[in-house]
Length: 309
Image (cartoon, rainbow, N blue to C red; front, top):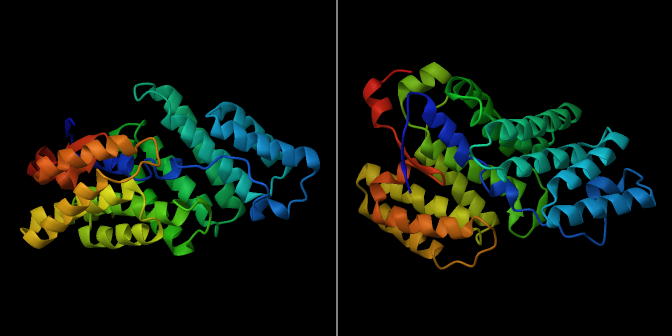
């Protein structure tokens, strides 16, 4: 993996890259025999039920533009449904994830659409944890496309959305290994691990790293979905980070054990192969663990020496 040398503030952008990552992307899009409970009360007619199942099938085939069109039509027909609104937001986000990294305008458009639909969902029901999660996810990825200054300004909002989402404890899950609440814990862990614990950072933005807080979050994620490769990798990376920073050989050994475990776990997501390779990289370079992201290792040295934004 490459090492990313960042200008001041840019670490926040990479922290956001690590936040939802593949966590929200692990959708089980196979048509279900019964409607989700969130749709059961909408009084869908037979054609709308067929449309819903068509949308699920299109998702499963990665025909995301077509799935979005189906879901958006249903959402417009039922404008009070937060479930349909955040489902459209999720699929715009997924579409953005599949675009090339250098297709910035297209990615910005996809994540912008995701944010618009997530905002709509949150405005319909501020107590909807899934809606808050997808707003956070959309803002996090949008931050990676708008430049360093704008992304830094978005960071406190995203941190607040993470906390609010966890407070609301969303219950939706696609399957046994993709729970919205677990994804929120995972996002929070990555965010608070990779964000430096600098007092002046909290003074400037109201955001500061916290490795112990991150550890609590990833442990909760693993309690819900212990089979997830990306969660286990985050756990191993975080333990390695803490053990290295604090000179704690016991914690460091735990981190190594989790990283070795990652490489033997069954793959359930398309990013698992990448994460398993990256576990080996962190095993060989434990001093880089605190700055790990799937996109590269963050080098904070220039920022730390500057001590300013």
